Length: 96
Image (tube, rainbow, N blue to C red; front, side, top):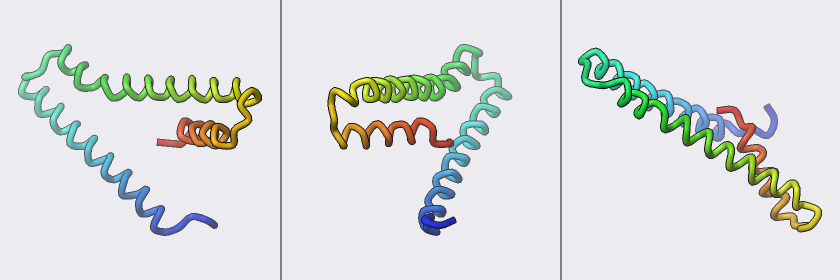
């Protein structure tokens, strides 16, 4: 794994572990709430859907931005815009 530093890998692992802990905490809360019958189906959907909906909106916005930058790259010959387009593309295809 040339070019990859141990410290960078540790940061990625730490971030992944933190995200897993957050999801476990959310799961624990949801299960406890469901078992106590304190939540309606409407409330459950409200708790579960915002993140996925927000993520889809963000991905759609990034894709649209990439498309605009791609379509205007010949009109605006800017290295900064090219770098931005490439970076956004990497962010969009980066595995979660």
